[in-house]
Image 1 (cartoon, helix red, strand yellow):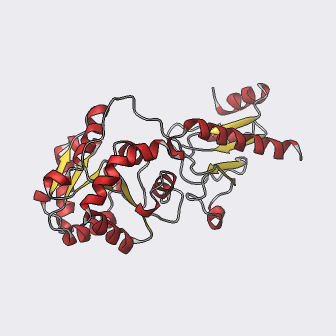
Image 2 (cartoon, one colour):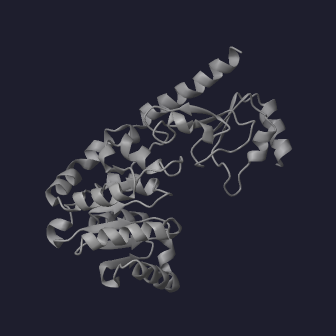
Image 3 (cartoon, helix red, strand yellow):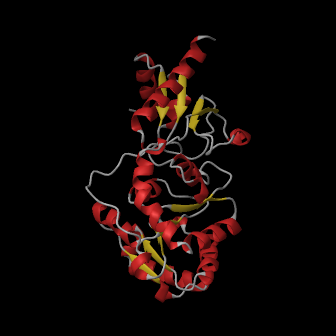
Length: 299
């Protein structure tokens, strides 16, 4: 259907609340929302900024992602979900959490499973400074782009620019989902990218017992890692600036015993956190929508 026809159908069906899951991404249907076919229209999940559409009434977020002082970033009215705007369902594999790799390796392995477009020069510059302070530490990359030889060569060239030697880096092409999860057994902890932080990859790593060190920024996108780690009970893994990011990385990497203990209890910790509690998340989501409806119906 074209946008007008879809909007007419939604209107005629008497939909009370229409939820956008795409924002300004490929194949979105935001023009449908511009027709205002439902009395309440809400953006959630699939986009990390305002839609800019005045007919979009609300955006669903959490307070870590959008502090009160940042509500001006949105044309929509900000509606807060308790604890987290996201909820993660555990993978359907019977995989155990292994011991910390550094116990056998005698060196720390940092991981990055992100899309390489998130690995900016600012990220590599900071990682280069960290690796200078940790001369035995290594980096392990796995990304969908790394099946192409030219991309691998380009990555090594960029790493060299920031003083990261090739013999301290491993690159891996994409694998099956199960093998990707198993690959976390080779990682001591993840260094998050910024300002575009991890999302699903962060949650998957937590389930595999691997924490992520993230840098909190100013936008919803740049605060996503902080939101996830806060909901998972790992607020101490949130850095406030580049210097704090480097200092925390070095400190965590220097305490192997503490890392090993965290790893063994992390899956249980996150499974009992709001980030993995689907039933509570559903109740919170339902309550948020009812609150919007009651506010509308009382006008």
